[in-house]
Length: 265
Image (cartoon, rainbow, N blue to C red; front, side, top):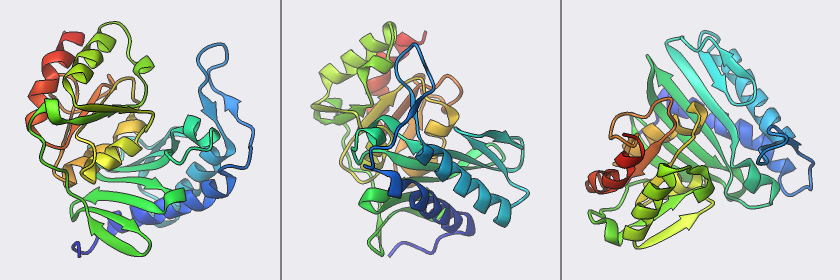
C-alpha cells in the first residue's frame, strides 16, 4: 500500500470527485457546446466544464479560503497566494463532446510557485492518478495502486504520444516528426490521459506545445512522483511558452531534445 496521503493530496482527491460528480452525468448526453474560437479551429466549452470548475472552486473557498485559484473557465483569484490551485475541469473537451472517455479533470497545487500536488482524473473510468509528496498512486474501485514509470532508455524502443500533430507549427512540426520517426510507436488524441499512462508505465514520452498553465501544472508533480521527468523543449522547467516534454525514463530527455531544441533556438 502507498503511504498515507498528505492533507492537500487528500483534498485534491475530494476536488476530483466533486468535479466528476458535476461532469459525468453530462457525458454522452448529446449536450450542446459553445465554441470559444468562432471563426477558427473549434475550441469547445460545455456546461460540464463550467459546472465542474464551479464545484471545485466552492470546495476550495469553504476549506481553504486563503488559497488562490487559477482556472480555465473562471480566471484567476489571488494567483500570487502561497497556495494556488490550478484547475482544468475538463481537459480534452473535444473528446468529451465526441463521447470518448479520454477527457480528464486536471488539478494542480502550487506552493510558493512550485507545482507540488497533481491529479489527472477520469470519472467515467473511475480513475484518479495522484502525485505529490507521498508518492504516486492510482485510485480506482476503492483500491490504491502505486504508480511507477517504466525503464526505457532508448528512443527507438519508446511508445510516444501527443494530442494532435496539428498543434505544432513550422519548426515544431518538423521536430515532432523527427522524434516520431525515431520512436517505436506513436499514439494520438489522448490529451492529458497520455501523461497518466506514462506514470502507469505504458507510455514512455509525451511532447506537446501551446499548453496553458492549467494544462500542465498538475502533470509535473504526478509524473515526477512516479519517477519521471517534465521539462520544456530546452530541458528547463516548464513555463509560459507551453512546450512540454514528459518522459518516464530520464535517459530519453537528451535524445528527444536533439530534435526539439532546434525548434526553439
